[in-house]
Length: 326
Image (tube, rainbow, N blue to C red; front, side, top):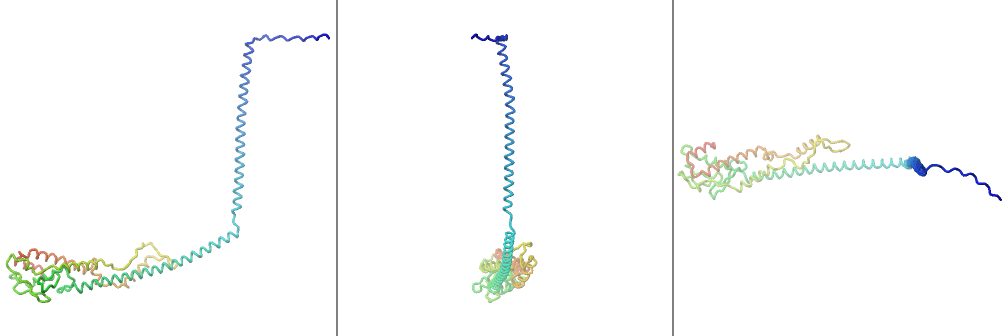
């Protein structure tokens, strides 16, 4: 068979190879730009989808939480029977606390009563001890000239005598025998108790120290000072428990104020019945002040005479007699 005729061939492009290459590069740049533009919105869409999914998950968790809290609240609701049971338990505790309070009040009152009794007993013991001390002083350490407690006691010099007196008392008694005109002792001087004769005071100067007619009694002085100090430090009342004025005591459903305690203290002082003689020997007492004054005066005069005994003249003796007022 005869061959079919070939179609006419299209004419070849007349463009050059360099221009075609340039077109291809331009097309590649355009496609790259389009690819970049298409890729950016896709990324934004991905992020938006992720955020939407996160919001959906958060809302779902919040709804779950709300459901759980509501379920817990419903489960924690107290039934009326449970309320009644709890009220009964609270009422029983209240009654138990009231009984405990009453019991504690009774114990507190009993303790206060015992405290008062102990305070009264201690006060009575202190008073008895102070009275015994004063009795011991009055019985064994009383001056035979003034009939008071020995103040700075001195004993007469002769060995066969040995009687003790207050320093100022024995000086007054001794200088009362002095003759004011001549300033000497012309008569025998003897003990006011046993009448034992003392050593004669020589007129010439210097005179020996052995002729001094007095000797200090250190033992009697130490005992008297210790007993008088004990009397001064003896408490005026017994055991006292210090409390603040604002402090109260709950008793019989009311607060007991400090006025009640003051009344109790006054009653206690009346019950003790403190001896006035013992009170006069305490710090600031009249008897103690007089004894201290007498002790200082006797110590001053006796020390001066014993120190200057060897050189004292008749004029000094007359001046001492006038000074003592005898």
